[in-house]
Amino acid sequence: MKLGNNLRRCRFEKGEMSQEDLANAVGVTRQSIHSIEKGKFVPSALLALKLARYFGKTVEEIFYIVDD
Amino acid sequence: MCMKTLIKPLLWICIFLSAINLIWLVFSSVLYSDIQGTLTRPPIYLNMIYCGLLFLILNTLLILFTTIHSLKILKRFFIAGILLIILGVLSFSGIIIHYACILDVEHDFADGYGIAPEIKTASAIQIIHLLFLLFALIYFVLILKSPENPALSKTVFREQIFVTMNITGIVCSIAGLYVVLHYFSYLNMGIKGSHLLKNYDITPFIFILLPYLFITAGWVIRYIKDRLAGVIDEKQTSDINRSGMIAMLVSLPLLLIIMFKTFLGTPVVSHGIYITGTITILWVPLYLFLVILIFSSSALYSFRNK
Image (cartoon, rainbow over all chains, first blue to last red; front, side):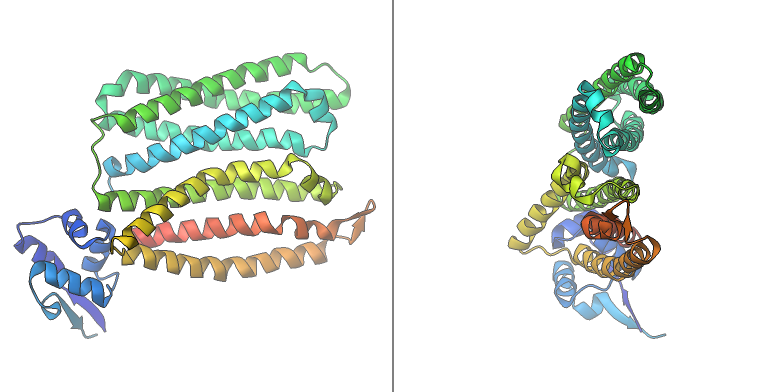
């Protein structure tokens, strides 16, 4: 099982914001956002909630489980 | 990370390394001023000059690389950049002549010949190195302060200081391991380990570690400030944790192999010196640089690829 996400789509829905802007907004590095989007890094519950709150969505709307 | 955002950490690395190199040049000038005394002491003293040259090679290459890339971004400093590159090439060529001079001095002194011309040449080249490093320092500080060099957002700064710390770690640990391995070879030639500790032979390790210590301190301050502000960069924390684990798992067996090789591969006593005790003297710097090398390489790899 892997963690999928709609982070990229959310960014573009929010005025095509850059990874850097999102990173600044939630207090991580741009590389962190990049890794999460690529599915290489699994964020903690806290960061997932921060991202969800920032986009005004639920965590499930941004993150989902991908079955093998 | 594109070159435009990588230029700032490179500038900082160059400034730190140049400052350390300048201190080293002063240090080797002190050794030159009493060259007869230096040559009659154990070869480790001369080796310090060689180590300084190795460090200078790495630093010069990095300065040239950074300057070439800074020219593409900061056009206002074009002429100064070109001058720095010319000085850099001269200084780099000078390193080879400098190295040859020291080798000549070493051999001629042993054979009883005069060493004055070689010392003059080496001293002249030291001046070129000195000019190059001073010019590089001024150039890089000016670039950092330039309005053309845009202020970075906090997130990019966090990335840059992390990358800078790890690149510096790799450069410093390679230089450190080179020095440690040379110490080993001298110890096996029959120089007492206690002699190394009593004299100023620990100095190279301090010089080599200084840039890494400064940048790590900067990163730690940044990290603590972020934590106090409620900002946690999980990716960086995860990279650090993973690298720490890898560094421990890889360095311990390596150290065990080196230790067993030292204990089993050399005679216990040679020329009245307890050679197998060498590992007990040098294991700290050896282990330290090994850990820094593995840790920094792994952290940089994780940061870029994971």
